[in-house]
Image 1 (spheres, rainbow, N blue to C red):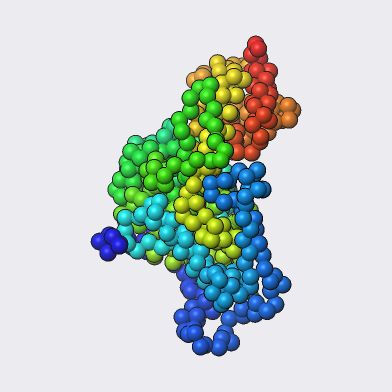
Image 2: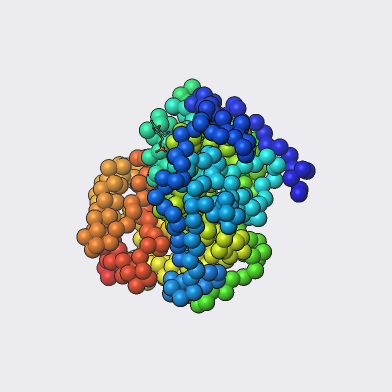
Length: 492
Ligand code: PMP
Ligand code: PLP
């Protein structure tokens, strides 16, 4: 309804890469514009569904709000989809559609559900936004980077960032540019300073305009930008004409504040709060603040349904999403049809919007409980004289700083200015990693996530509270504590 009064997105031609501008529509998919209900197509090589050796597929899934594994075993419902359910009027998505080639945005029935979801959760403040399915955010990010970068460009991001993003950017001939951060994420002052003082000839690169950010439960630091912080950064994006890639796999994993010594329980059966209350308590997204259409938001089912679904979606201005789809047509095309069928049945046929949001409340509660367990274990078992952290407010990671200056090697290698060289820092980090591994615990090394690799001056490690069962998590932290004490020559 309000869409008519909303402004249109700005145009982004000046930001697209040569590669993206050169993409033309798929000749075969484009021909579908001439398809009418009575058309006999001898055009695209779409195999006839007669030869799809799947007559029906089904899945047993939880009914809202009885979400737990134990409850699902009892009350779960089985949804089946036949090959021709759409023609037979039983469903809007069937095997003959989902298992064939389709349009780049994804099958209409699933795209419609996700569009409605986006309206409810983000309500973008401009009129011509659009959605396209992706094969997950790893793939969507790679496509997006190709859309907006040329060799030699800098991509701005948090000082520590998702390691795969660094590993995607670097071979493209681009560099990550780490912006300073605190527990609330990127620091607007540093972002403004970097952009306002950019010297193209000294840097041998044009002023950067692409900001890759994970605003909620950031990987690896768990930093979560407040609304105020988001507004300041968006204002800078307007000032410097930035494009924002908002990568939000953990958006719905926003938690109750941590209280030392306490563990939030998850009632069984789960008791959802009214949907409006849940939505009101989520920090608004960049997409919901974006009046110019300069945000491309990446969502993913990986952390809220299952990573192997290899399904996500992007939301942005129609012009930007159109360029995204032109790349999709020559790469992943669509998520797997099996995946899309099951997601459609789960979301549309089973849960509906209310049930889906209740599921999101449920996993948020489960992650809150797990966060409480790991942070309490850290308080109990890590040597707090050298380890420090901010309890995560979202996501699935816990980021721990270790005072590297207290390591015996650091003392012996101190230079005149009090620092040590990078090799020494890495040596200490590796020793800590190996000491934990020797105790059969794997932790992730902070340096893997450093946006500008090799510029670390501090020591961090990342743990996740997503994976291990509660008792194993506590045992692992206890062993990490022992490993660090031994490495740093600390008394028990
Ligand atoms: N290569 C060739 C030669 C093809 O004919 C096709 C399908 N038209 C493809 C690749 C695309 O295959 P896929 O559906 O596995 O992406
Ligand atoms: N983006 C961030 C910030 C992540 O932490 C992850 C998962 O590790 C991904 C993207 C990958 O998501 P997907 O499974 O949708 O490719």
